Length: 296
Image (cartoon, rainbow, N blue to C red; front, side):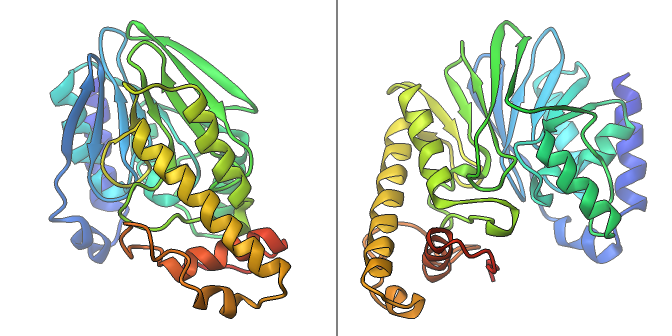
């Protein structure tokens, strides 16, 4: 079966994306970091990929971009040559779901929250997606009894989007938070048009903190592997900036006036995909009920 997956992905990644799209990813290397027995994370381009591997087969948590599928499959195969049985999407954005179609055509089952399938289906109808819809969906959560662990998948409401899930390896004490957690490489992206909210992002961080300990290893959607202390600092930053923005709103300040106070300055976060000013804009609009937000 695994040979069929490799064959399908090899064909798909050559024929579907444009040459320019291929060139963008030509130099990307997939880095593997083993976290616990049977659990690893793959770093490449796009969202970090969690991996469960062992006797029952491999599960991927997210799958980055379509042109990287061959490299991702090879990295997973280096951990264990059993087939990739499932891919779980933490949310619908293309840097986490771009490999769905390739892997699905090879026999991998795609899973996600109901809203992920709905948003991917809408994008497919509009020509903004190549396909790869989840074939198994859920509303609240699901548990895998897999590779000697209990892997709990839990939907979190209106956080980064309206379809986010976090994935908890109970035995291994590992959590994949998807894009509800950006670890230092950029300011958080809250997709207001897709149902995201600052309060939901804060609530998700608090939920993981409440069910973790000093030994918990946390896979963020973007950035390096994190500890509970890293997540605590992230949570505290979110609250401080939210409270600062709310104080400005309550005082009648415009977005520009709130941005001028440079609320993000005290924190050690890179000006990456999302700048500090754009993050403050997202928080401001989330608190005022606006959705006309673009990260760029």
